[in-house]
Amino acid sequence: MLRDMAFQINVELQYDVLQRSTVLLGIHPLATLNQTLWNECFNVTPGVTWEELPTATGGNRYIRLDTGYAMTLEVSYAVMAETRHTMVSHEEIQAIPISQIQSSAIPYLFPSRYCESDRLGRLAIKMFGGINHPYYQTVAIADWIFDNIDYLSGATDAATSAFDTVTQRAGVCRDFAHLGIAFCRALSIPARYFAGYACNMEPPDFHACFEACIGNRWFIFDPTRRASLNGLVRIATGRDAADAALATIFGQMQMTGMSVSCASNQFQPLGAADLAGWAIMIEP
Image (cartoon, rainbow, N blue to C red):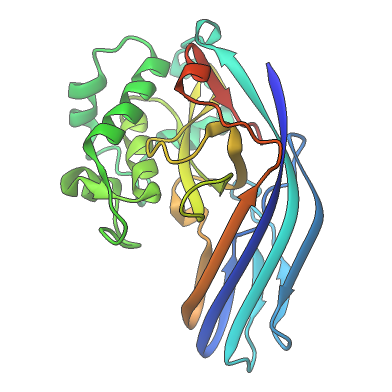
């Protein structure tokens, strides 16, 4: 079952530039067969130079900016994005052995900087190893994170990992996603980080969740339950947030303002009742 949805996205970012800096900015959604973009508009402070810089990691789009002599950096971005998501019946999701997993998913089986699946293996097996299907294991992982990790702004920072999150029992969407990924990988389920926009999320912000590869198909999970799965627009994919950061700064800058909006006049969020017996794929 395929469904298309169009979203208007607007972003405003402001920084104080403390010294000349180079910034890798990751706010542009991917343009793919299943995600169409139009009316894209990107503006920066006069005197700041920039270029689009696709990377090898996930095909993510980055903008490389050189602040030059600017003392402040203002960024504005707008785009209309039409996404396609696929609803798949639970009965159609097949478990397959690692020997049959597609080669592109193999890197998402390994531990990474923020997802120490090797350190969480015993815990993952103890809590979820008795479930005999990887899809239902992943559902149980997302449910456990929602039930046991407090969503608490300011409780973590850019250095917080999945191991820290399960220890501290608090975090934000980034941390929830990292923990879900780490648990999945500990159970030999390929999992990857999803950075994107979320329609009508309150408060408006960038959002992170995760995807698990089951039967060689990638299904989306949001253990925060703060966004509707059919209202997501993909910005980037990666092993963890290090591959899909909003801004990577080489120099010294300080964010002074940010506004993000993702809206649609036709959007009808799918709730728990709508998703009963169904999983969602948001294919690149």
